[in-house]
Image (cartoon, rainbow, N blue to C red; front, side, top):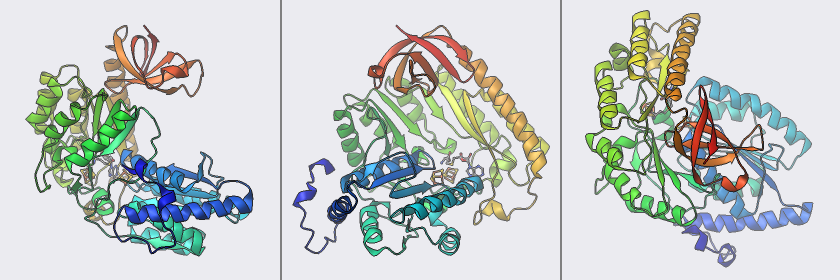
Length: 481
Ligand code: SAH
Ligand code: SF4
Ligand code: F3S
């Protein structure tokens, strides 16, 4: 793996290699020379800050950016008053975009105080040509922009940006390529996200992800297993397998493999004690997967199963390819097979043409499915998606009213469901110091619920038995036994 590559042995006076990832290691070595030079000029290392703005997939990409910056010699900090700041953007809803524009103004202020400062943007927003144009025109102080398909080229682009001192823009429309074995720096030493596939082929009519992440591509199972084995050897106990639709993993490989088969192989890796995955599309959830989850004591008893809408009519317009009845049947089947499974979901309110009756159907599913947690979103029009062209956009005040009603109901049910575990003893993976009180640490149950307990930093990374003494709606207080 990458750790064995010694940057000192790379001949930076020679031509850069053509093949990957060797080419990127060459540019890391080049950047490292540049960093040494910076250190001589300033008497300190350059400081860099990576800001993640998107989903778990983006979070994993951000770890790769940090890994590369560290290899180059940058000193990583959390503050955006740095010498190099990169925003890894999300564009799934309009407000994600607005946040970036707002914060760019603040960054510009820092850059005026520190003329050496470089500002970079990458991630999903950059895959929209209109965004790149707007930034070039209205925010010309941005030094580097690249997209989701060529993130593996970060070292090369960084080198071009620091040496050229003029704006570098490199965005690809799509790619077939998956480059393995690049550095990455985990945010948590004991748990890690692992990409099993990239892109999405589902084209739900409201969603921009297939346009900005490209076509579905699965990694070879051997590459995934090798990565997880290396993580386990490095102390990782929990992995989260990542993909926009993990249930269709492996279908397009030269030697097809199902997601359930992959899970079975991941389970055999010694040292891994918890396996999670995100996200499951209801249309592709197989009996085989339910069976594997049922048999396993490593796969967490949690399934995130986005509903989006409870109305079959709206589901059809959303191109989700299941009906209300099929969805409910699936939840029933899951609960029958694995009684203590936590089911969570995503719901969109105010999709074009959503009537009061359609909304009542969503409320009905919420009541019947009894979600342990639900993420609720107000529909956001994304230019370029089929839904953006649909008529009958729902008036904002109506959407807000429905949204508030839905939120109240999902919160009521989630609180009721959480109460069931009060006074029981559960396994908790302790993840971090409590953000409010340093006498406490915070961890997660198998079903992903958050628990705060009295304890010190030495518990971090351990799985401990905890009595849940109090339930406060969304989280628990507990005591280590
Ligand atoms: N691949 C995942 C979801 C990725 S996006 C899946 O299919 O489940 C995460 C969530 O954002 C989606 O589940 C959806 O609820 C929400 N979302 C996506 N596009 C949206 C839009 N245009 N407006 C509001 N919410 C949206
Ligand atoms: Fe978007 Fe649908 Fe793909 Fe999820 S499955 S990323 S909601 S298009
Ligand atoms: Fe956002 Fe891109 Fe993830 S649009 S939700 S960061 S795949």
